[in-house]
Image (cartoon, rainbow, N blue to C red; front, side):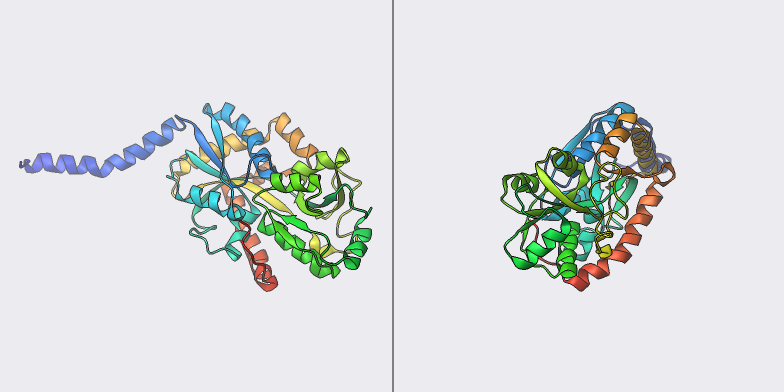
Amino acid sequence: MKFPRRKFLQFAGAAAVAPTFSRVAMAQTYPSRPITMIVPFPAGGPSDTGARMIAEPMRKLLGQPVIIENVAGADGSIGVGRAARAKPDGYTISSGLLDTHVLNAAFYSLSYDVLNDFVPISPLTTGPLVMLARETMPAKSLGELITWLKANPNKASAGVTTLGIRLLSTLFQKQTGTQFPLVPYRGGAPAMQDLLAGQIDLLMDSTTSSLPLVRAGSIKAYAVTSDVRLTAASDIPTFGEMGLPALSYSIWGGLFAPRGTPGDIVGTLNSAVVQALADPTVRSWYAEVGREIFPREKQTPEALAALQRSDAEKWWPLIKELRIGGNLE
């Protein structure tokens, strides 16, 4: 069948502009169905609880459910890889950490580029890690713990759930001259369960899930990696004041979309995040668990992108220098 030349040009022109109209229409109606937020760690851990805290106010603001999908394994790289391969239409986004969106690239041979295969949406919070021990651990302070570990090499075990925690645990051993095996876990929740049960002796973990248990007397806390003591737990000293400033460390969390997600959609998501972080209930909860919300002027895609790149320059060489290895699957 042959078309007259005028008809052919009309069809060709329509085909050329159709993708543009489609993208504009999609942005104008977004979101029109539920959004999936991939959390690259198991349910119940600090990454999961933080994602759920922000998802509920985002649902109210966007008018669509924000469904949490936990995809754990390989230090978070399985879930992040799924997000990288998702259609860039704003209906699949990923929560991420310093570990998943910076540190993993220095250890794993990833199928995606942590810096270039995602569009940052917004940073969420930042906060330290805390060194924890089972409740029956004999040491009452960090100094006593170091003395005990030196007297009992390889008698204690420490859980590790992310590359950042492996990094800090390795640095701790190097700085203190202690030795203990590292036990890999797929996420914070199963590691914490084993610490509570006495199956492991030590754990570096986020304050999000650990502070309530410390307050309840279920586990011990020896030191935090922040530069100053936490307002929410002022009785826990910092590593710096205990003579270990090299263990100062802060872990941030943020939201990301697959590369190619339209700017208007990223803007809509960013606006929802900014408003959600201003919610008094959200702010109160984060303060209680020792997490600091980024200042309003830093809640931008550009700020999160800059944070990624500066941390890559800082931590990638150190991870390679320490030769941190071993699959955390």
